[in-house]
Amino acid sequence: MMDAFRFQITEEMEEERIDKCMSMLIDSLSRSYIQKLIKEESVMVNGKPVKGSYRLKVDDEVSFFLPKVIEPDIQPENIPLEILYEDTDVLVVNKPKGMVVHPAAGHFSGTLVNALMYHCGQELSGINGVMRPGIVHRIDKDTTGSLLVCKNDMAHREIAAQLKEHSINRRYRAICHGILKETEGTINKPLGRHPADRKKMAVREGGKSAVTHYTVLQQFDKYAYIECVLETGRTHQIRVHMASIGHPILGDALYCSLPSPYRLEGQTLHAKTLGFHHPKTKEYIETDAPLPDYFAHLLEIMQ
Image (tube, rainbow, N blue to C red; front, side, top):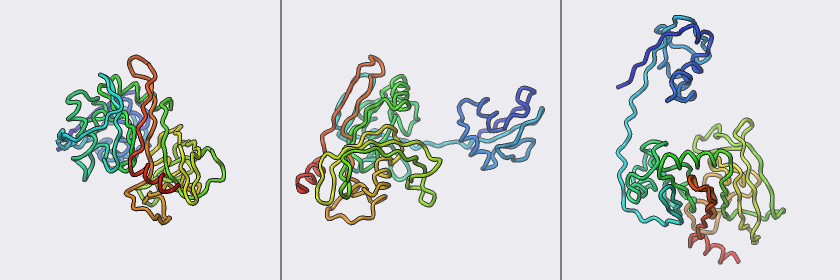
């Protein structure tokens, strides 16, 4: 089933691009989603499909269809959570390795969201929809560490604003391949979707700005223990940036082709420190997630 919509163009809307006009008239739809509908020929002008660049004329009749979205029924699950901080507005959890943050195709149970729904009940923000209640940012399945969750929409909006202005303090620990010549540095390279592999990100001209600062905490014979501070928070940012300078993260099957003598499941990357201003009190709060056992053991045997 689809929802059908129809409206007629007035003088005020004449000569506007159809994608821009629709995004102004329909607040609930983003311009990118409208452009997607146009490409799929779900938007008609006078009964015929048009391109997004089409300039509207007075009395044009615009009609379009919205497919009904059927959301799966996400169930609360009694999954233990390591909580680093919690109050009535937010909580910070220490996400374990192997846990997916939110439900998606192939992962509708066992996710952090399933666990949060059991722990918090109805006290989760709804801004990102039923699939991502409380989720304002995410970390990869095999990345461990601190993740901030919002219990209401006010907190979600405030934390999202801090993420947008890059004021949240996010410090990661990682083990990377090789010997770094400089003990500290900054990687400033734009990132975008990989042109050939949609599962990967890549350094791309015209991509979104991405800045990672790194410091070598300990240099071993073949590996380095580093701290990475995110100035921006793009998908796979640390993993792609470190690989781009020839020092991919140990265990990263997606961005590293170098052999590893260790039996690892995913990258050695841990979101250790998370600092933010409380959405209500504005007090600065900082949490610290201890290194997981496997990570600490690796550092011991590398000595």
